[in-house]
Length: 87
Image (cartoon, rainbow, N blue to C red; front, side):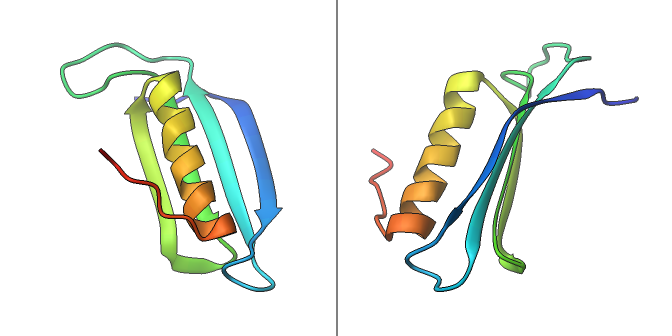
């Protein structure tokens, strides 16, 4: 199975919580996406802070709304130091 990905959005922001580090967000769309029972949508999200593998996160199979929410929560937590409620 080959994956063809289109870059939707990618940016980095300086963190106030982790001095001297950048928070990187990348949202990509799988062009060869086929719906299944485990995947809700064609979007992939890659998140990390600086070169820290401990703070890196990856998500696949998200809808665009869910991908944006995941990215926003990660940015709020690691850029501004705000931990938003999940519920």
